[in-house]
Image (tube, rainbow, N blue to C red; front, top):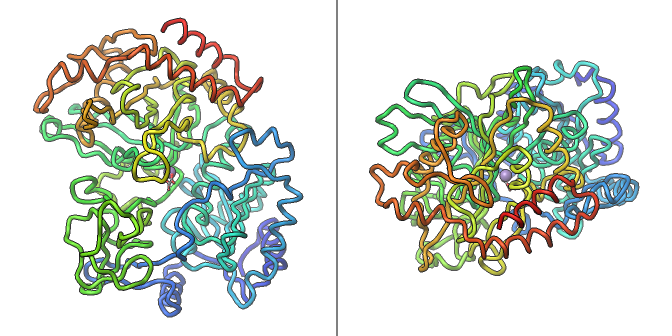
Length: 591
Ligand code: OXD
Ligand code: MN
């Protein structure tokens, strides 16, 4: 092996002594090595090669039936003091966690190969970037990490003799749910993941490193790791302004990141560019603005519902060099299918469980009849995306004009409002909430607090995370303005009022106009809302009265909301920053 970094070699040696693999293979980034691995995975049945003409270099993978999603209940933050993990995270004492997991990892790779994946989050060599080493016994992980991150010898070269890398150890072991653990040691830069093969649990660069570990690093080093898409809006003059936006799941984050402007805007010359669809690392720049990079190199998107209408750019991204997980296998032409795709369901098909599937038995309301698992995914290279930004690889990232928070609220939140200042914006992010949908188990319409969409991803105490946001406000002079949007307001019959999708650009246009002081606004107890006539409804099937309705702030509902916020805040005790307590008091007074 060609590892010259002593700390990396030590990590490999110690992990090999524990997991006892038969072989150790360094992933070099060489195409011939990947090709050999693809062939091996096809021989063992771990992957299926799809139609080379229709889907060149694309593969299908099926996970174990019990292993199809992130497992928040089995995800732990292991820092010395329990209080540092905070009331939202699961916590285990690090010594106890290492001991417990060592037993599970012991001999878990017997007879198998341990792959060593050197990867970079962010463009290799950029000062924004961070390096990780993932050790895994899964070829699926190796090939997916190659899509999602930058991998290989170039990363080891960039690392040199530095010990500053995240140590990730993953073994599928025997996929035992009872012994499945996704464990983070922020104080050691380490992640241990065992008994899972699901992307969100095992592609350690993504949620584990780029959010949980990175949020802790960012707190200590003066930057931020956020669950945010980054997009650029190009106006007819050719100027591009960048927006980062955080939404909980099932709120259309990937669709917004790859938005197609309405025809009216296209004719005028507007374009939207995607920098990232899931994660943003944000730092103050020398010019006093906040700059963001997308540390990832690919998309790990939800397949069902992705089609030529909802998100043609995401669909196009999956047409080559992609890996599909838990979708339907169309045996007629050896391609893939999922619910919501434009084409009709295939006659001759295998479902995500690997069983013969009869589309006639599919009942929209009964998820158990789906051919593709509702959380089936594609892993696709970002460069496949037709609207990928020219700044995607920019080493310094892109300057942010606005930060947008959003959730799914049937009534409470208006279509858009602007926070009065940075700390008010932090308050708005901290009270973020979304109503559960019929798509998920449990009651519908229940409000779940999901601050900054980071509830499952903050690698330390969330109260300290809020304090870090407030501190960041003091680090940059030209801060982005902060907004909240709600595409999901409904009428009395429960129908969405706002058309959403591409028309969301109309709201982004107002947001950017506010950032440049080009438009006035109306002050309300929660912040500034647009004058109704400032939301462009040209060529839309709605009236100014509808916009008025979308922008109302109902005091009684907000007084109810305040109770929910107080309850949520109470669990943080004294650790909650006083600035947020003040903002809550201000809101109460204004109401
Ligand atoms: C998520 C994801 O679960 O991006 O948030 O996969
Ligand atoms: Mn996400």
